[in-house]
Each structure stands twice: as structure tokens, then as C-alpha cells.
Length: 107
Image (cartoon, rainbow, N blue to C red; front, side, top):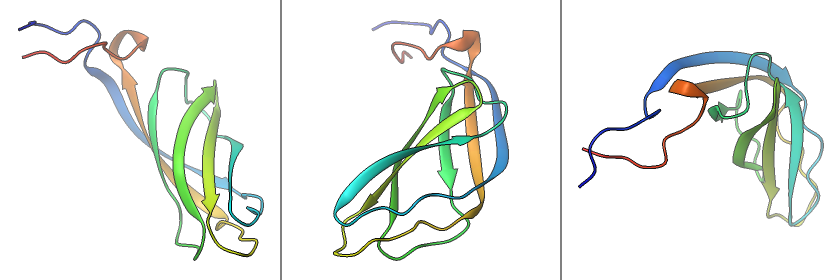
């Protein structure tokens, strides 16, 4: 058993909103788009909540791509083109202590 975590705690948890306008997702495709979210940093863990639901379009991943830039991956498994909902998206940002996530969890 390993004890202690170096850089294992969150230095901060932040909730921010950014107004984004996703492009259309073509039929049976998954695409990644970049959006400006001021204040995010490489190494942050992030979640996103859209302003509503778009039938046929789903968010399958989001990540901090670079400083102030979040990449969101949308999927469209339908037989037609779908445009994910535009508007104010809420992002929860988990900033790890020391700037990097821990490599293990210990008791």
C-alpha cells in the first residue's frame, strides 16, 4: 500500500460560463471543435454542461487544449446533419495542486 499523494489535491474548483456556437455535425460522425474559455490552463480537468439538449447530438468529451481553449467533441449517430445547441455552456474546472494531476491514489 502506498501512502500519501504528491500533487493529488485540487488547488481549486471553478465554475465558469462561455457562450459558444458549435458547427453542424455531419451524419454518423464525431468532431472536435475549439472554443475560448478564458482562464482554463493545460492540466486542468474539465466538464461541460450545455444550455439544453439537441436531439441527435451528444457531447462525448471535453479537454483543455491550450491556455484559454477548450476542445469539445460532439457525436452525431443519426442519418442527418445535426447542429448542437448554441448558447451559454457551463464549465466546471478542476485545477490540480502543483499544476499536474497525481499519478496514483493512495490511502
